[in-house]
Every structure is written in structure tokens, then in C-alpha cells.
Length: 204
Image 1: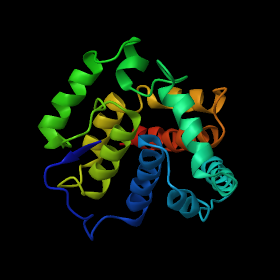
Image 2 (image 1 turned 45 degrees about the vertical axis):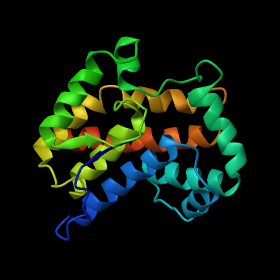
Image 3 (image 1 turned 90 degrees about the horizontal axis):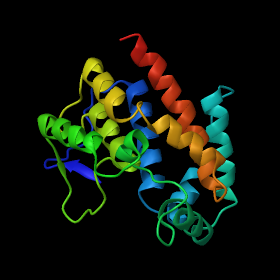
Image 4 (image 1 turned 30 degrees about the vertical axis):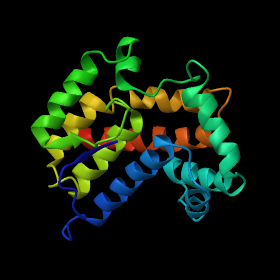
């Protein structure tokens, strides 16, 4: 994934609602960057939500995690995102926006990363427009762990260009994919969460 050269702890002045937003982005990033460990699954079983669409999706995801094993989810991740030649889904912004990898959306993301002081982590082979990477960056821009917390206007611009422009479609595809069980539930979380983000940014 992509991280700033000087990754720091979240600032103490980050509002509680923004910390929750950052945690939701990090949940998505963790489960989408690689198959979750047993520890990850056990941690997610403790999640609970209210009666909102997002709350219900989070509760459903926790129940699926409780009934899953690391081995079963690793096999699901392999089928969905890797496959023999290609997985059922291709979780990159360039692919969703153009039909091809390594296209202009990735170039634009790299330009914005450079402008914002975010560097690609050494040893990471995935292009930076992987869904886990952009979710991780959004979390860092919200809580300041990538150097500084971005203003809502800056968050909105990054979201519109690199997340909201394609990730909701990926999450819907995760809900509907044939190989998807845990990731169908995670797709529901992602789709509901990004809908809230979209509505909130519309008021900025």
C-alpha cells in the first residue's frame, strides 16, 4: 500500500466522528489488501452497528466473520481478486474507469500523491490505485497519520477523483460476485459507507 515517508500517529484533536470514518476506511483497507488473519476475523466479530443501512451491514459483516476461517476467506480472496490469470474482480481504479490497468487515473493519483507528500511504500508491487491503497490514504488524510489531516475540501477532492468515481461500483460487484461470501458482506459495508461519505461531501 502507499504510505507517507513520515507516518505518524493520529493527532489528538481529530474529532470522534472523523476517527470513526478513518477506522471504517482502515477496515476496508485491511480486508482488501490481503486475506485477513484469524486475528483480523476475531477482531471483526466484535463489530456492531445501529439500525441504519451501514449499521446493519456492519452487523451482518461481523456475523459472517464469526462463521468464517482464515483458510476459507483466503480461498475466497484468491478466487475474487487473483485467480489463475485474473480474479473475478479487478480492484483498481484505472480498470474500473477505463477498462485497462496503468492508465490515466493511476497517473493522476500519483500526481496527487506527490503533491500531498504520500510516497509508495518500498516492496509493494501493487499499483497505487488498488482499492485498499486509496482507502488507506483516505484514512490517513482524515486522521492526520500521513503527516497532516486534510481539510474537508481537500478530502472531498481526493475522494471524488480517486474513490467515489469507481469504488461504489466495485463494492456493488463484490456483493454480487459468484465467489463472494465474506466479501459480499464487506461490499455492503463499503457501499453504504461511501454513500454516506458522498452525501456528506455534497454539503462541503
